Amino acid sequence: MLVCVNTQAQDYYQANLTEVYVVSKSDGELVKTASVWEATMIEVDREYLLLKKEDGTLVKEWWAFFKDDGALGECYITEMDCKICISTKWNTIFMYYNYDEKDDEFKNVATLSHIIKSKPFKY
Image (cartoon, rainbow, N blue to C red; front, top):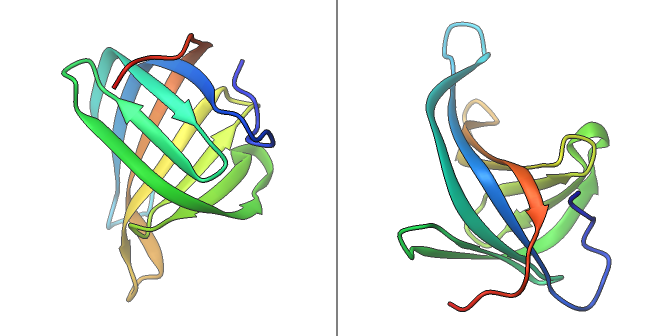
């Protein structure tokens, strides 16, 4: 089970399902555009989130705590203007991106789920 980011040390996880959604222009609902069963290694630190995809692609997002958002869990804002929420209730990481200032909403969401604890990994 995923834990909250309250420690000073890194925590390591493996997410096994990645899903991508777009916000529907007509009704604001999420429409799934991709669903891939793949291992994504995750390093969670107080200052950043590091993702390593199966193909070796690395994504490092520096973040700052934003708020506790109920079922979405602890939410962080990144230096790339994304919102990342770590939900222990759903055992899922929600990544909101492509913020539209005019509509005051994120246009895309990616989720990492089916998360298990992992050993440290090399990158």
